[in-house]
Image (cartoon, rainbow, N blue to C red):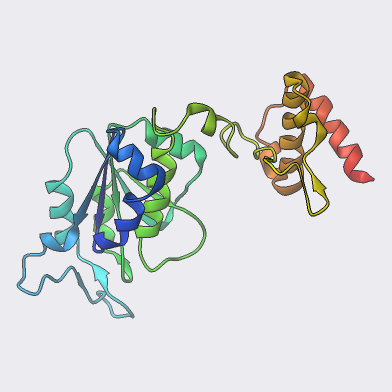
Length: 241
């Protein structure tokens, strides 16, 4: 997979692509990440990429001609262009999985007061990582890139993300490791039992419990099977105590 990030600040991504899972995925050839400096597509001697808003107002607006030239020079018929904007569709794990199936993902990062409205004509979709405003789209692009790359084959073990929170529609069950007991807190005995069926049931129940307590809205969209219905009823009774 290819990920191209169109940005005014490519140096912001240095640590992001040079560490941890992202670095290893690049080295293994799982993904190719390119950082494209939008400023290189400005045609005036001062390399301006923005101008004052028409009609007045605070801040500066990214210019349509500069961004258009950058997009055209770095995309093809296989490219899927996503604009980072708080006005976009709220990002989630389902969207991450959808984007991970693409051949080439292009992430357009805004800055300053935002984009010239006409730039929206040159993108395929708009995405927001939440109901808040950042100084630019670079952090959002890192969030999306990270969530997509870890889903690619051979980036991490498939088992490592299949049971992540949101991957199956529920929050992930609690995890433990050694020491078995610490500061009066002990790893649940069932996880030390070696009984895989009981461990699986425990994890399923605790995943449901966490979702019920922390994100009950997710349960409204999740289709429970008979075993899960029984476990959820047990959880509701237990939480009443």
